[in-house]
Amino acid sequence: MTARTHTPGTLGTARGTALYLGAVLGPGVLALPHLAAAAAGPAAIIAWAGLLALAVPVAATFAALATRWPDAGGVATFTRAAFGDRAAAACGWWFYSVIPVGAAAAALVGADYLAAPAALGDTATLAIAAALLAAAFTANHIGLRLSGSAQLLLMALLVALLTTAVTTALPHADTAHLTPFAPHGPAGILSAAAVLLYAFSGWEAASHLAGEFTNPKRQLPRVTALTLALVATVYLGLAATTALVLGPDAATRPTPLADLLAYGFGPAARTVTAAAAAVLCLGAMNTFIAGASRLGAALARDGAMPRPLAKGHQPGRTPHRSLALLAALTATVLTAAVIWELDLDQLMRATSACLAAVTTLACAAAAKLLTGTRRATAIVATTVTAAIATALTWYLLIPLTVAAAALTYLHLRRRTPEPDTLQSTEPERDTAPPLAQGAP
Image (cartoon, rainbow, N blue to C red; front, top):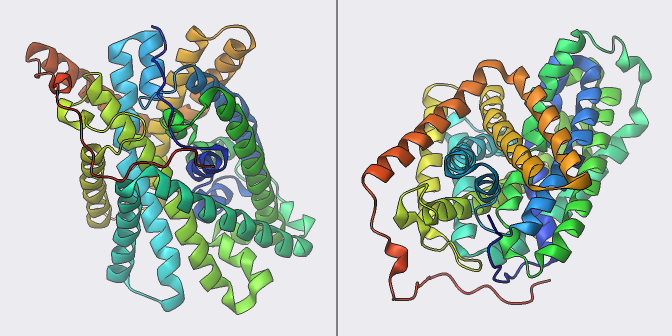
């Protein structure tokens, strides 16, 4: 398969880095230090460091693929090039279907933090979660330029806040908190790594935005390197500070970031943390929704989803129909999570299972498509991601079920082909304002 001709988009390096950072540095920093500490104790630091090491070959692999195929299809485009339509459909459906779960989880995390300072009840917390989701979807309906500009500001504030949390709390570190170091043994470290996959996913989401860059070949390696450097600094600093300062309490307190910020902001820490929660959740949801909506339109364009969803698949366009479907699915997941009382750990592990499947298959595609050191890097990324994913156990049934649904859709569609509405001679219209050219 040859690469598609790239029509230049409007994203520059700064906004592109902000969107990539929002995809990787998400709401996981609010809750995952607690979940990882509960699973592995202080040895959770090993899981954080190991996944950061894995992030390097994964990020490099996605950058190499996105540079060659700067297309809204992202992981589905890469997988189709290597393994054909069936694998591409499964990979695309994995990512598209998991975004409502991940977005609902992110919104609930943010809502909990925002509701805590005022001691609001469950109904108000749910209303805040719905408002966060509405804001993210509205920003994407308006257009990527607006959401990219907002993302740049949000990410700058976020990095500054997390840096403050680490630097003000670290002087209170106590090495005695590192004993016992691994109370749950190697199994605990692997379990922590499995849930932490949520925090290190995002490269697959950002790959769907590659076609929006003005010059993907030049900008993507730079954006990837900047994002990796920032993520490594923030995650390692946060993981080490959590273990050294909070000690055993990190495993029992669900709001470790608020506890760390208390050293710098005192009684105002809860309010500051609430603001950080809003920034984190909106930033992550913004990028994932942007990437998934474009993926859905590209899948429809290529016949892997209903054809009407293809409207808006071109760079610079807004895929309103795909966004509307994602919004409906997200509302359904949020409602189900409330009715069935699904906790955060369950939602995050379900999200991690599908994202691990996406990453594994996309990196396997890279191992087939790329050559030289890039191919070797892709093989490492595929092997390690698949190994860590095994710790998700029965959650892996979720991507298996979604893959079966995707293959069933392809089979039924080929038996009753849909009319090719994209071949209309009337040019596509889009109500969103055009993206300004030359965005920094």
